[in-house]
Image 1 (spheres, one colour):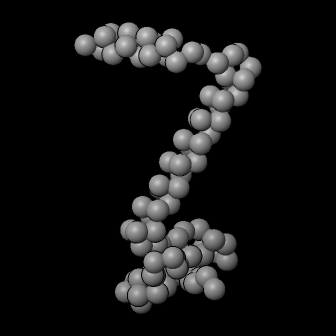
Image 2 (cartoon, one colour):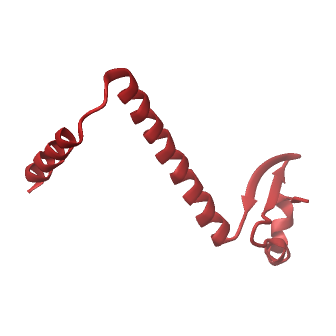
Length: 90
C-alpha cells in the first residue's frame, strides 16, 4: 500500500522520513494531487539504472530497424569504420 502524506507533514520531516523504506517511497500531495515522492538512494539508483536500460533498448531497437530498412553492414566494414574513428580521435 503506498504511503501518501500532504506536503504540510514536512514540518515534522523526521516522521515522514521514518516512513520511507527500500521499495516503499512516500508520496507527497499538494492541494490533493500528487506532487513529490521521497525514496531511498537505493531506489533512486535502481530507477536511474532502469531509465538507462530503457534508453539503451530504444537505441538498439532503432539500430535494428535502421539495419532492416537500409541493410546490414558487414563485420569487416564495421571494424574498418571503428578503426578509422579511433585514428581520428588521436
